[in-house]
Length: 214
Image (cartoon, rainbow, N blue to C red):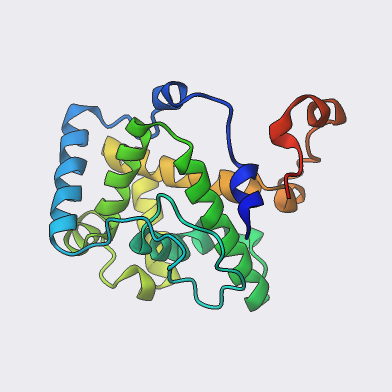
């Protein structure tokens, strides 16, 4: 999971363009709520700094990747969410499965790092909302820590947010789905799972971001 992973999800769009593509569309009230949660979570001892190269990835084969956005808590969150969100796309073989999850989380981090400040702030608020114990229980209804959450409880949380009439929760589900599925199914190793044959030859030649930078 080297530097090539980061390069594979980079975009040529400037930060201002990425800022206009809001994931959460929280509105003023939602933005204020997420901001308050982030401050409270930080004061309560939740991880606030990017994990760097020191991160909880059990069985990781390569820890050379340096996280630039996701915190330790975020990584644990996505370790719990990805098996439910990606589903049968993950292999059943345990070692390869851990590698797939590790690589996908690294691509999520690399992708978010390319976003503009506004989207980064929204996603930071969303992740803090799910990581902070009080709000994890009250708005996600996941009683245990994400590290110990059962597949059933994760699936139930995602379904509640998917069908929620509360805009913040429904849009939060969409945001989690976007970053997870783009990071997993958007990688060339998994194109075949969605029936995508890969970019045409002319696009590979014309667009540098499609080229193999390994």
